[in-house]
Picture 1: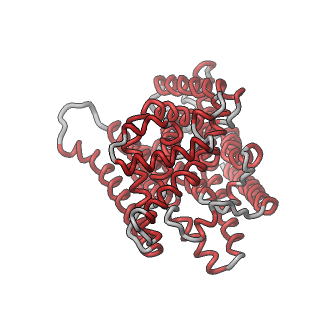
Picture 2: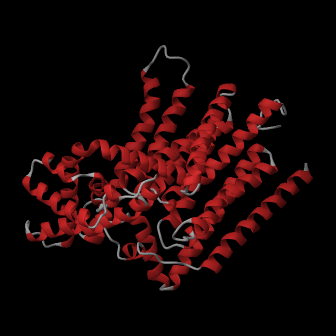
Picture 3: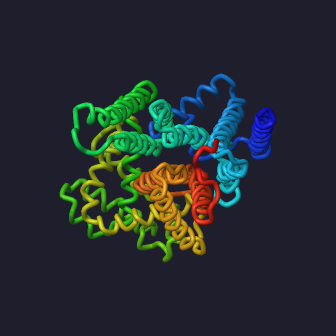
Length: 470
């Protein structure tokens, strides 16, 4: 027993040293890097969620330019700690050194792949972008959710922890609202599963479902109040994050045709559409100008989305609010721009719904591919086939063992992967840094499913690969 405990401590020391060396090396060799979006956090733009803007400005305000290095150090340290905790937890539950090693490889994979294969060469933990914080926070969130799925007797405590982290994540990135929705689904399903049959439904039965729904609503309202209060304090207006409606409209303009203006009843909105679409058409920014093929079109769209938004939509709407509506105050104009973008989307979308929906589904497909790999023509079919195989394996493991840990982690991962892809595709392009969150857990799920299938097909431990061994 003493030798076993000593060996476990030794493995944990090795893991800690490895992660410290990896992320310390990334920071030392790569250095802290600013990107075009960094300035919008430093200026506390209302277009950004408050979390990272407040953190960045607080640290820089205290330490000056050295604060950038402090942020880089914090991000790398959080990444190392979050990965360490997941490795230890999964390794202990599986009682397998092999699984611990595979978990480590899966979790560090995005931090290696992104600088090597992403066009930006981005080192996630060194970037002065919200992803530097949200990725390790997401790891903590996933760990809490995983514990809730695997340890049902303590699920209440772990779900509370996951809810708190999900709330923090939403203050750093609007995309992370998907963590709240996933939390609600898991919380409700976990209550559903503990019920015995469908008969004799009492008030107490329904209260078990109302409690997570109520917690979800409270946290969502609290998040809205925090964001709006931040903008009131910093930018002078009680409002949510701006520019989101403009981003969504960019997707609609991308697939719209000139004839779609006939469906816009309000004359002023029709005139704005003609102006915006004309600029996009002349600049060859639209879907009709895209090259054929999923990967080439996705690359084209990644460039054109921002150009439509920044060169066509925003200047036209901003000019309209000032010169036609006479709004001079900057924050008032930004809020009004969002209102106009929302109205245009509402009027225009029914006219191009078929094209928009097809593009939305293509965008989700790109997001799923980029979650598992990088976008290349040779990898499209293998990646999609891989998803199909994993779904069959997950279903098979669940059918044979309703308490299968491999099936549990895979179901959680797929829920978050699909939710993230759907949320991002609704507003913007699914580039790697938006998709990388679930990559390690997808591969970890695959390894665990393979291990469990191997034992069931060729024998082995009768307790099962993913059950605690005593």
